[in-house]
Length: 369
Image (cartoon, rainbow, N blue to C red; front, side, top):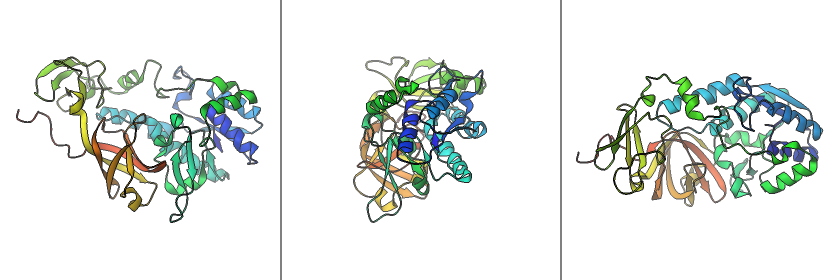
């Protein structure tokens, strides 16, 4: 079963598997974003996505089906998204979808129907780990500019034997050229960089419809400087703010200001210079190990704390489903709700949700105030 979104990557993934001799069926998930009247105006999930996927399946001569996962998607992804933002955390819904929809319920559904594996158009590689380990391991894509291994950290290790990523060694430009040669209409389809279920005007409008006006995250409050505690402005609501953000903040003296932390209890937004955002480490929970513990706690491990961030050297201590990650050098952008993914060279060792900065204490006022 190949999860086909209507885009070029999943269509080419299906073609490659079909050409290799596998019995392939394309499957498009009917999610929140396919609902009439609520369809965002973007290519990943407009009202023609199902029809486009079906047309691509016909073009490469494979059957196509539609699977209704609206309830699962709404429960696992949309509700979590609203809840996290309402709690002053910054979630990544793509990771949530991959973990709790595509490589969870969809894989289970595929097995019940009789499929041996589920494939997607993700740019990531599945390969064998070192000889001392069993099973399969997850690696970065060959095309590092398109690598999507970061959003796949939630795939369970025992599910990797049933997950295929045909584009793991492909270049995006080559994928488009092949799609054009095959006559796929999606060959030049633009990529979506937005949250698929949010309206065109953005995720803040989506959240505003689902959180009441008197919610602490929507109410105005003071903007305080983290070094002095001085009020340097007022915000219209903490919703949409995240650690490390600088756009739209007031000036508080020389230099740029960045979001240092959010305090929904007092509706305070703490800001400061970039250096004030640096943290020596983080705590993560809801973790998923894709390598033995001794590898994760060993040498040569790097941590990536945002999809577009570089992975940085670190040390890790595992305690049940919680990790303590210490960076070799302090990092900017440790945002609760985001994910930390651990790598060793090209291999994904696992990931988890960031709870907060390591050693974070009650910093509702600056030291000495």
